[in-house]
Image (tube, rainbow, N blue to C red; front, side, top):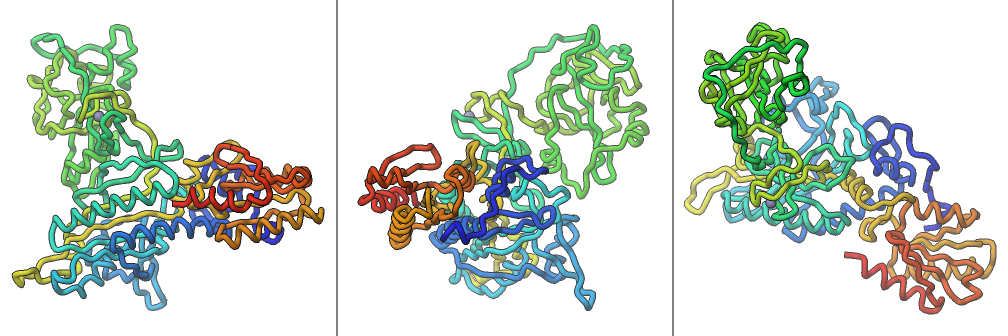
Amino acid sequence: MRWSSAFIPTLRDDPADAEAVSHKLLVRAGFIRQLMAGHYSMTPLGLRSLRKLEAIVREEMEKIGGQEFRLPCMHPREIWEKSGRWDSVGEEMFRLQDRREADLVLGMTHEEIFAYHSTELRSYKSLPQIWFQFQSKFRDEARPKSGLLRVREFTMKDSYSFDLDASGLDTAFDRHFDAYRRMFKRFGFEIVAVEASSGVMGGKTSVEFMLKSDAGEDWVAACDQCGYAANVEKAESILAEVKDAEGPAEPEKFPTPGVKTIEDLALMEGGTAAERQIKTLVYQVDDKSVLVLLRGDHKLAEQKLIDQVEAKGMRPAEPGEIKKLLGALPGSLGAVARGDLFVIADLALQGRRDMVTGANEDGFHLRGVDLDRDIDVKGWLDLREVADGEGCPMCKQPISVHKTIEVGHIFKLGTKYSEAMGASVQDEKGVSVPLVMGSYGIGLERNMAAVVEANHDEKGICWPVNVAPYEVVVTVIKPKDVDCHEAGERLYEKLSEAGIDVIIDDRDERPGVKFKDADLVGFPYRVTVGPKGLDEGIFEFVRRRDGQKRDLPIEHAAGTIVEAVLDDRS
Ligand SMILES: [Zn+2]
């Protein structure tokens, strides 16, 4: 490719609305353009990188026996009704009607459709199967942002495994796990694999692959010592033991004028430290009010509550509802002597004494509260969100909590979708059994952004060779100088012939502009062909990721460059 005739729309400034580094750089370096919020066009440069990501994913899927399909992205309502997700999935699913007023869905995932096709499997003899596709997916995000990280339209590789039993599913899941690890390594970043909450997918076990990044929106707790890692929606930790004084024989009411928060109470004169307070939250679980108690300095992990309390719907109660139920507003709430209400409490409160909580009277609290004696707790659950520095549940060493980007997610689905679609096979004894399914997703654009989040510096992107739009740029300093032009062209041809993805910067621009653009776009290697070097018989060879420079004698240059690129490919 010749830069002079290529469409590479680099920009000097960051897009105004961009926060994530990948968003800024992919726009500035000319890889993507926004059509509308959450919908991006790939430029030719962007598509080259995306295709390389896709090729790596395809290779790894074929290595584990995956067979490629292509399913429609528009689906009939009926098939989503069968699984129950026409109702259970909310506004994030795009729905539309055709001219006959038939309801249609733009697929956000394809469990239903693959399960539907799996009804053609008849016998255990045809198992196991792994089916996959690359397809556009649609998700009506409330707030699309961060460039390619949170979009409404994206390309996903989704695969589905079909097995006779749970052990077959375990094998398919493990093979995907290994394949995913290999994909991320080849993309050029390290991930942590974490247990996750399955949310809307309804499976029993799921693993998320997370890249540490400030641009992320998921919090992960991880232990460097033993490798324990989990999404904070699920993570557990060990707390330092607390010894409480016995306290008074019964709770004592005391005035706390103006105290509205845990912090207010900790800071007031004669106040109580947050870890000796009981935080009282009120949730509406279906039609029932539930009091949720936590230690004052602990945060509720709402997903843990959702995962453990079987309910159709759950939301925090409104102030009006709370006042009606407890007689006070948030700030003075408590569960003492409210055996009539359903109270659940976090395990960290078990056995605690001499604690402080709201008196259910605005401006008053109770001290000397003994959990076992004074509060009728109906259920003790792990409800709190783990915090940085708490003990690892496996090895007790301090864990760290950091922001991450989810770059892949794999699920053990079981038989939910196969039962809904009537997908079953005859086992060895001739008994009809539902197929046991797994589902495995990876978004291409999001991973492209993740590559950039993990591989950039202040000058621009540093693409790993495996996913670079071009592996080498030949920068001709004076394209109008006949010797320069010819030396550049000869090198360009040699590299092309050797199968290297090479672009020649033959633009009539100042060298400074060319170097800046090359660094911004982020080609892994740059070869500079200039009059001074030609006089000395050398080309300058620069590695983008660390700036390492070498002078290559012209006659061996092509060979050395090819070797360097091939060494980096994996
Ligand atoms: Zn550990």
